[in-house]
Amino acid sequence: MSIKNNIDQIRSELPEGVRLVAVTKYHSVEETEEVIRCGVDTIAENKVQDLLRKQEIIKTPVTWHFIGHLQQNKVRQLVGRAALIESVDSERILKKIDSESAKAGIVSDILIEYNLTGEESKTGFTEDQTQIWINDLPELKNVRVLGIMGMGPNTEDTDQIRKVFRQLSTIYDKIKHEYRYDNLEMRYLSMGMSGDYPIAVEEGANLVRIGSKIFSE
Ligand SMILES: *Cc1c(COP(=O)(O)O)cnc(C)c1O
View 1 (cartoon, rainbow, N blue to C red):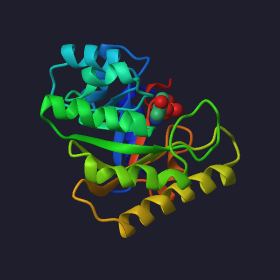
View 2 (cartoon, protein in one colour):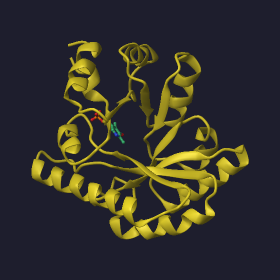
View 3 (cartoon, rainbow, N blue to C red):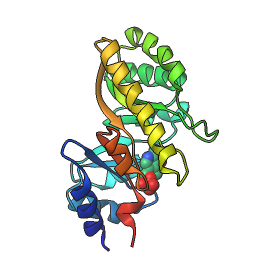
View 4 (cartoon, helix red, strand yellow):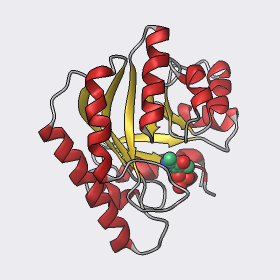
């Protein structure tokens, strides 16, 4: 299988309205360019340094997403360079993105990351913490929340995976219907990776983040 075959295969499985984001972390500039040649228009990286480096070299216009855990001291470099920061996993980082965006004179589009799997290694908000970031919104003039992002549990148990995606979907719908703010526009439910995106799509994902499956042999 080539990158092209893999992408065509994934595309054929995605219903209309589901956006494919290619995760190119661990892969070279050349491989990333190959993905873009295959018609993928959104590329995601999980390290600020990698995103900036690839952006410098790759001249084809493409949309860049950031999906990694973000450190406070890296926010300044990232703001204005990623079209969407999908991984806003704490109130502290949310406020930092807002203040750095204000300094840069821009509004940054972001997703709020949820962690419903309870895995220690993963960061993010729990359902109970929704009010924390919602309450901040009126003061945060330089961020715009476009939805939420989450990951399935690291297990083979598809019932468990489905359960988590269903919870994420419920949180997404609830926020969408209950809150009205100028800087809240629920557009993206980002969930599903190589191993679990078909389930995520069934549960309502409209943005999937796929890496290893694109590059598999
Ligand atoms: C690596 C990564 C992906 C893609 O995972 P694959 O299993 O390689 O498809 C998606 N989302 C996040 C946040 C990631 O870090």
